[in-house]
Every structure is written in structure tokens, then in C-alpha cells.
Length: 105
Image (tube, rainbow, N blue to C red; front, side, top):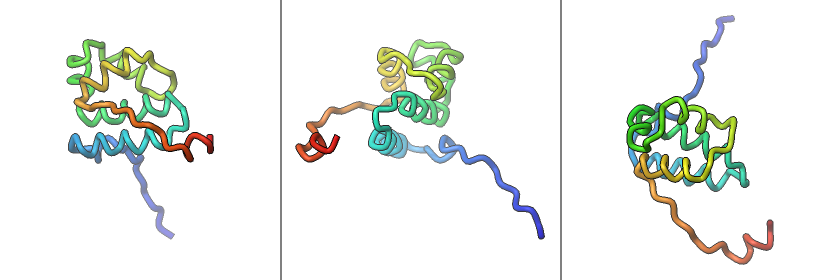
């Protein structure tokens, strides 16, 4: 029997356009269930796809602090999230929840 060789899947390699990046973040927001670290990790995936050095320059944060904040191991401050979102060229939007969504929580 031959061994199957696999490689680690990296979503950042598949986020090529701003639309794909926004759709990925939207899907992660829907699946997060209030897990801020999960969203931070998703933003980190997008930042790596775009180029962490460029995101660091555009956000005014150091690369090292970005890697730490967006690793998924911690919950970064909302100010950091806002800087990263702006640097990524993504807009956050608010929408009223439907009554059935509110009662199911």
C-alpha cells in the first residue's frame, strides 16, 4: 500500500480577491457563535493572504503584534480589529436581527 502524502490546508492561499476575502469573513462571522478569537483568526487568514507586511504598514501596527493579535490564541482589542479591517479594505455592516433569530438564542 502506498502512503498518501498530504499538506496542511491554508485558506490564505485561496483568498485572492477582495470579494473572496469579504465572503470568507462573512461566513466566519456567521459561524463564530460569539468567539472573538475565531474572528481574529479569520482576519489573520485574510491579512496573510493580502500580505502581513502591507497590512502592518496600512494599520500602523507592527507585524509581530499583528501575528499575535490575529493568531486566534487571544482576543485582540476592538481598536486593533478596526485598524485591521480598515487596512484590509473591508467594511463592517450592522443589520437588525430577525425576531426568530433573537428568540432562538
